[in-house]
Length: 207
Image (cartoon, rainbow, N blue to C red):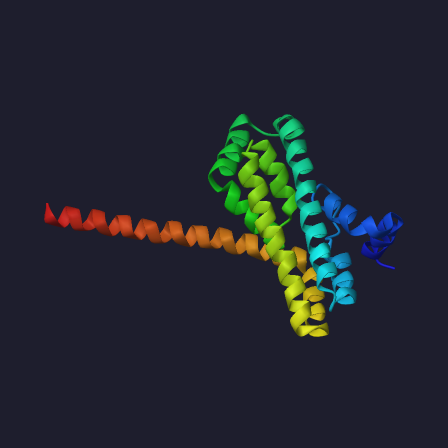
């Protein structure tokens, strides 16, 4: 039995509330994505639209509620904890990132394999406003879990197999997305630099 299955078996003690509890705690700390419980429930519920909608609302709302706890933890203890091991300038950068890219970052983390909980902590440390934090989380989580429900409804077992493969490789995919974003940022900086150099050269020629 895998460690993931052991954790899922533990959440069975919560009965019908197991999906909500798993989704809630995953957005705070624990590593098991709620999709592993949500997908089998969706497969069993196909054909029962009200139940599918209920499962989607449950997993989405409980996940965003959990992220608010992560946000509070980051805001309450994050800065003091990081401050013990880092310079004040690093804390200032975290705050600047949360203010500048917070809403977009939360949306991407909520929708993608990038750990949603980490962005919740960072948003709290950076004291991001709660309204855009919640809105981005609802949109990102709602789209992610809604897309899974739609794909399973349309493609059935083929979609389930694809989503499970995605979840098995979630960490690798998340790292890949982060590295791709960093590479894209460097390419953009390089491209912007070429533009500036070209303008500077043209100006010197005219003079």
